[in-house]
Image: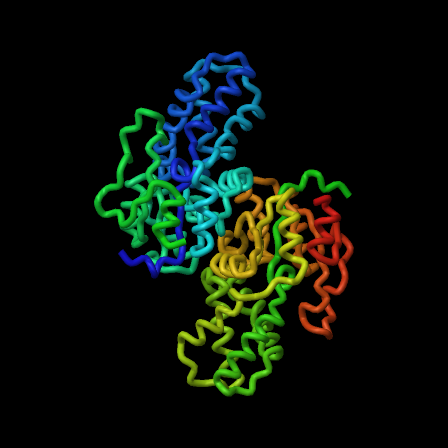
Length: 237
Length: 237
């Protein structure tokens, strides 16, 4: 496969770059301790994430106007606190817990891998996370992005084509000069429909030890790697 | 003056971060040599820049739809090549010369200053330059931006209020948590009208040795510095 035309790598972030589940569980456990609550951090993280696609679907479908992910996350958090029987939390502490999504830790290979990939390619986020979330995450984790793109600047949530196409346009590139990097086959198939090149990076514990989906690359994806450093090797960085 | 509420610095780029005049003159001189033309690089650079505000004004006024700066620059370039009597240049060489704006050199204090400022603040572009231009410039010059914001993501050219307000919104901050940094008083006055804090950095040779405007900070601007390193000193970085 010839990747010489690729000028930019655009990255999915939740799951691909950062281990959201472990990080959110840690934050929820700390929150629970400080309030004397009996929450299970991993169960809460999974429940929070399970509301992610439905919340974006309301925007994709046109049922509600553009709403950034921080606000969708906060609505989901209120739903979950109610479901888990948690009451009486001050607004500023809810805000702080909601911003746990700004404090996610990268997988161990990410900073080295991105640094190597950046030497040859433009590296940009193409996440459904909003700009502030991505900027704050990057500053805390040392992620050396060239640009923060994605849903908020496109005003469209993946897998809508506009999300991918806007990223290429903003980079001044044809879609075929951009390669989408993700741990999720569905994201890559959608990117390919918009003309982007595709690379799968396996994250077999994103959803915990019993993960059943996205354990392997699917047919039609052009490149597969075990880590960002492996991706750097395979792309000659 | 208390700047403790400031979380992000948003930067004008042409003139403030990069010495566009010297860089464009150098590129035009090289172009002229390679084609055996008698162009004066500095005169051509000044002429190109003189078409900058009129070209954006067509977009601001609504006379034409959103058009990114790369395209406005190219239209201006065609106008100037015609005016200077230059004909028969292949399209790809015109494109290459137009992308001279992606290859501008920073002032000598910029990389050190930005690196220090980044340790305490989110640092983002708030330029009328489009995203690709800013990304390519940053990669070449080593500018360590946290985010590339500005006119293209706001779909509004400075000094329209929307340009400033969109940057703050995308960073998840109130305007008063953002400080605009520019070598141009008018840019800072406009940012202040949208509620941003303001810092002037003097660039007394942006327009060459005979510069007459923006030689000093004007009343109403909150902070003045001689360089980005001086700004870092004054902001405690």
